[in-house]
Length: 170
Image (tube, rainbow, N blue to C red):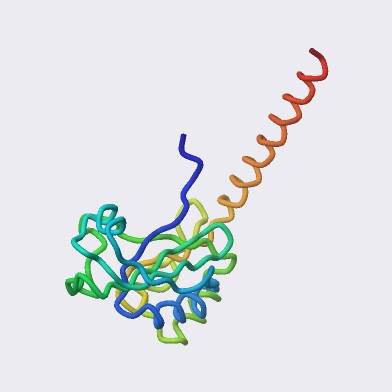
């Protein structure tokens, strides 16, 4: 049974620069120390021969990123302007309360955006941006996302009350 998503892993060219970027631009915090990785278990799970490097976890609320900097094997260069239509993960999304203000703050800090903030027919506002390695992330302001979260919590609490009531009636 899947309980939810735990994290998104991203290979980066410079772990220290990426940590600063995600901390300062997206308000994420470093979770625990930066750790060196190597050995056969990593080789097996990554399907790489003798991988080694450093890894760090970043978090903001329930959203986590696992940032890898590989020393071995030498990572292939990635086009920092790759089209999001290319196969694979095209982007990850960050929910924000004020996308226009976040956009202006990041733009002033030199973050590269695909376009200004757009408003969609459902009321959501969004834009795509790139981290220092060209990885794409979306800034999303979607009031209905919060409503869905509140609704799920309401249903969860209602189900718990029904279970308690059923237990005491039995």
